[in-house]
Length: 308
Image (cartoon, rainbow, N blue to C red; front, side, top):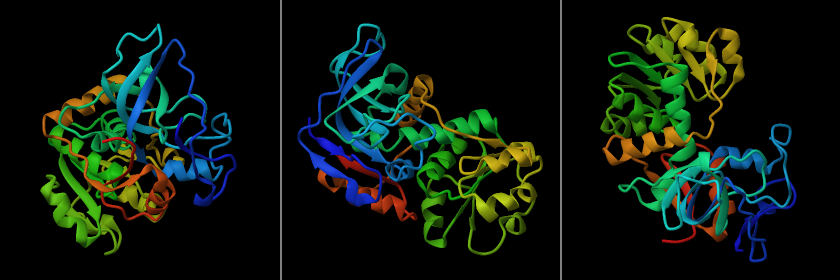
């Protein structure tokens, strides 16, 4: 099998293109996906550096990547939701780290997949799962956002942030986003009602009044300022720093969820959710793709493409 893998932790130089990777196993609850595109996320860089070895069992060599879009090649005997030939997308976070998505074939537990939205290309669908699930679970579970509420999303032009503002708009919220001035028009086009400049001082001082809910995607000083931004600190959610729990808010660690992926697909096909692609790299440039993501300040999603 052809794919990108690494057999030691480190910088982007450890990533190598290989043609001799073994075909992955297909367990009874596993869907084997022929990959068309794989999303690239900051967590891929963290895993490659060895930063999550205490959270999951790791088995070298590791194929990086958790986001995927492709076509079902085969399905285990316990799989009921998918069959060979189905177009799918998903967040393939298994119970261990080894079989990632930047390879020709990826074994995905059934819970990690959904049917690909018809309105999205494979590249766009590959950019949606992790960011979309993080945003959706933060807004609907941790923050319980309802129609008419004022919701503040930090780093609103990033991968998770842009998914979050679109989902919040679809929920009927009055959305306020923080971003650099160059991204203000980009966010207004997505339905964001107010856009604030994160470099112009504390956001709490820029708000006309406290909001109903805050989604923190930055941490640090931005999270420290969050209690002043919101009416009730129980409605602060952060995907960056668990210290939010000490503030009385909620820390969100995204999980694979078939039903949530299906809802994201429905929203995409309804025109409520789009996935701008910042850049698509061929498989052999996976290292460059990870470097771009690691640098931050990317508007939209970075993906690796294997098939058209």
